[in-house]
Length: 386
Ligand SMILES: [Fe+2]
Image (cartoon, rainbow, N blue to C red):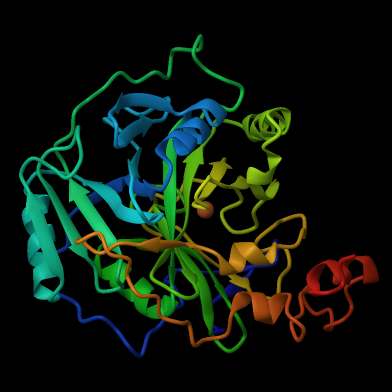
């Protein structure tokens, strides 16, 4: 790690600029990027629309704005745009689009110029790619992800005041995406060119970057780049108001005898400070339920850097991360609907350096490897579990 970072009393470092450099950058376009407001919706291809609808509507309580034989359009309680999630029946479970809302209609011209200059495939449809959305641009970005930008959108009723409709686990906003990419520094630099600000990252002492979180809206992130074989989608996250809403979702999944949808958590993140729960939908798409991160909107918001060996970075209580969370992710589609080939990560893997046979984690910085108490060390070593 570089020396311009300050160690805090919470065990992580802070700095003013993201301490991430790449020796393999995507060229910076001359064209200015579009002014992105926020992550707005994700389009998921699912292989059994009814099963997926049962999960997202009956179990998680998302609101159906509109649906037909092939597609379900869903939104959260506080949303006023047509949808935050599109479920579309298809042959291969995958992500068809990570969609962002931009500030003005003219920002779509900027998006076309920005990505065209990079040599990316760009497609624009005046009537949109999905119901409820107007003029839209879809691209295959330089990292291999299908990104969408739009401004025009059909407004629907914001149900925030309809407490008669709320369930104990009500999902109130789309919070963020999380993308898996082999080269996190390269991805981070590209996203900075697109106008994103880094808020947190995970590194080791040699400067290897394992993940980075970045935002447009003033929260910890609109998307994160997780190091791994990619391009793939790690998860999409919906927000609840309070921690107890997340516990209620766990209770409900147990009562429905579908607790096997729970992959990891509930718990408190170190990164982002948010309370979390990770679920897997019927196709294995990972969904995070997330609440109570912090405000990041000031221009001098400090960047937080975690040591990859700090076992509180991913879970503030030091609970271990299950291996599937590191290794499994969803395919993404090109603009023809074909799965993008997955490229292997060549930098060290976070799982290998923390919980693999040669990995180690610490609770207190300065402790030597192997100083975790025996009961805790077992949790972090594959093969130590009964
Ligand atoms: Fe997340």
